Image 1: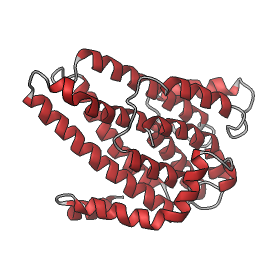
Image 2: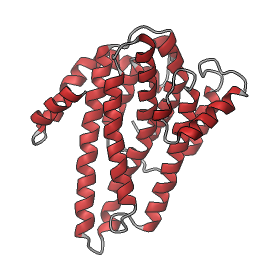
Image 3: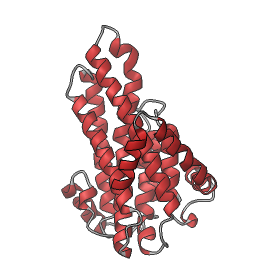
Image 4: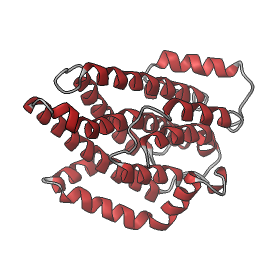
Length: 281
């Protein structure tokens, strides 16, 4: 799954979030576990890639940027665009648990968000280092960052009626402005009326300018499917990518989780890290 699809999924989550919070039953623990493990695998993959970028940039060479940059560019784009879904899902998970006075999904969603924000901070640090990213590439990535931040705050603004979710916005004031603007527009009834416009706008905003492939396409799909499996199936169309992912998660979630845990354990020092993460999450 391409990183741009995760931004579109973030809009689905924002639109359907009120239903999950107010009407649906408890979030399946198996889906929460799948989200945690797939996200941690992706964070580890990003960490290795960012370390490799730092080392290779320091090593330099006349052809370094021309030959190696496209691979690293895709990684940086994935970190920036993926943040929209990570923040929006954390907001929905938090509102869900607060509504029920439980801790079914919020701790895991917060843990993943903190890891993602750390990866984002490392990307932004690289943006100011000319050795790692040249000025032209840096400008493009910075424009992508600003675009994803605005979309994040708009979607968090859509969720403002559920709870105090300012902490999940990039700019809480901007998110509140979006929420206020929505109150003067026609009601969208859990996002369904506005969904066609949001979907069209999202696709227009992210359809061009990104690398054709994402380095963690496999894990992106698992993360997306695990989130969708937290929602009632009747919220989604009977056809399409998101419905297919929902059905796939019901069929393969146990095997996928076992495989992802094995992937975590294959990294150097992973058993100790895994135990530490399990205790913290």
